[in-house]
Length: 165
Image 1 (cartoon, one colour):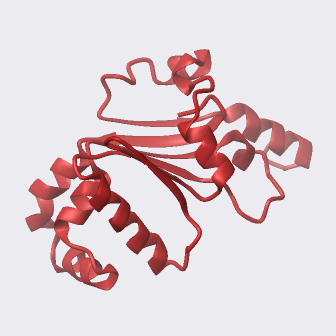
Image 2: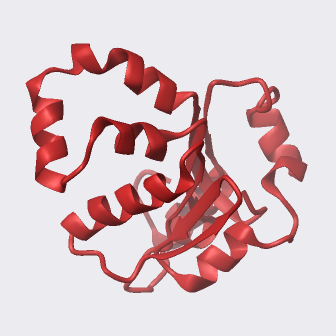
C-alpha cells in the first residue's frame, strides 16, 4: 500500500478459508451467489491468497470530493476470475466506472483512476512508515491486520469543532 494510506484492512488465506468453510455458511451464502451470478470458486478467487481494502489519508480528512477514493489489492491464483467476480459484485451496486489493473497474480482496483495509480505506483510504501511499523510490527507474518492513521482524524475533529475532540 502507498504511504498515503489512511486506513486498510488485510486478510491472508481468505480464499482457502472460504472454500473449506463453505458448507457451514448456509443457504444464505448460496442465494447471495445466485443474486450476483457467482460461483463459490469466484469468491475464493476474489479473496485470494491476500486481500487488502484501503482508503487514502485524504478520505479521513473530510474531503469535499463527491467520490471517496477506495482501493482493493488481491493476490490470487486465478486473477482473471477474481477480476470478473469483482466487476459482478460492484456492478450489482451500480458501480460501472471501477478502475482496475492486473499485474501477474495481482489485481488492483480503485474507485478513482488517481488512487489506482497510487496503489500500483512505485512511490514510498506504507511499510516504510514508522507509525505503521509501530501499529503493525509483524505485518509480514500476520494473517490479518487493520491499520488506521489516527492523526488525520484527530486534526479533522479538532478543526471542525467536534464536541468529541
